[in-house]
Image (cartoon, rainbow, N blue to C red; front, side, top):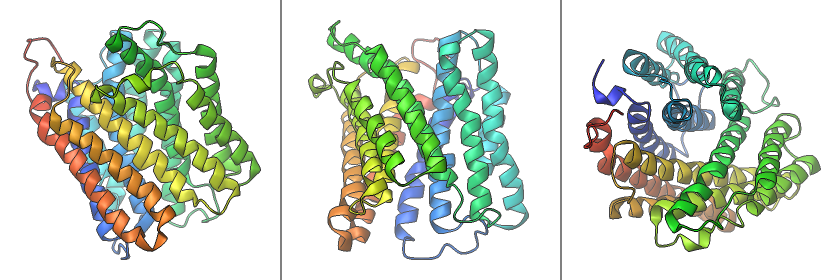
Length: 384
């Protein structure tokens, strides 16, 4: 399999992941008041949360890691037939909700995907001795455990009072984002603004990572109460504090930069909302969850996909006006999804529909603008 589409992990996973994400949210919004029948084991909210996390978000994460690990280690991850196989495992796994024998086959495929991905990126990381990335590697089997728990809980094999694997998975993905943004956002901003004063603060960065990791751990044992409030609150404040020298306020003229700073700000907002919702009934836990998902994960995946696609296909790092519109739409959609139901509960349905349409348009714009880059060779003739 020598087609350029299967020569770098970001190409198929960004394209297919974006198409899936674009379809899932409006589909869910328009069936919000209905029971999703014919999906044994994964119905309603369980289906929605599962596919957004283990379908959409994990696909984008896979595309990013398969590409980034090659840069970090100067070793290949998955290309050609191996990459086709990975994409096939992920794709077949999306049939997990159809029921019958197909669902069983899909379940096996889906539960194989993260272990295979772990091996594929783990081998080059370990051979290269890339210890600073071992945390990212360890996050993948942790996500797999969350997926297993989510399936067992949704199918009734675990009680509904047991730990919610989907919520822990969100925390783990946020932890990955905290690690990655701590490296790239100050670096990209410093290089673009040519200002050496823009720096990461190592001590604060480490403290923020530890605090977010503890938040995921507390989610398992005490998702509500004072412990979660303290840990998530501290995590939010530390993530905020580490960004004080990142120069985010100076990036407004550069959409490819401000979208990353905005996504990072959503992490802060989501963690602080999680802290508040743990002890105060005035904020529903779902508000905090969607600040981290529709806000942080949605914004950062779109922003990083736009940048990685341009950079790794040999294009100039300047997004088109259509992608800037996509950034505005993803932001508007997140604001409506998070704050609409909170401030105007009677308008929850309306806010959900508008937000879903914004999300859909944002990711469709990404696909329309970038599909030709993902499907064709680099103009400079280089590999990738």
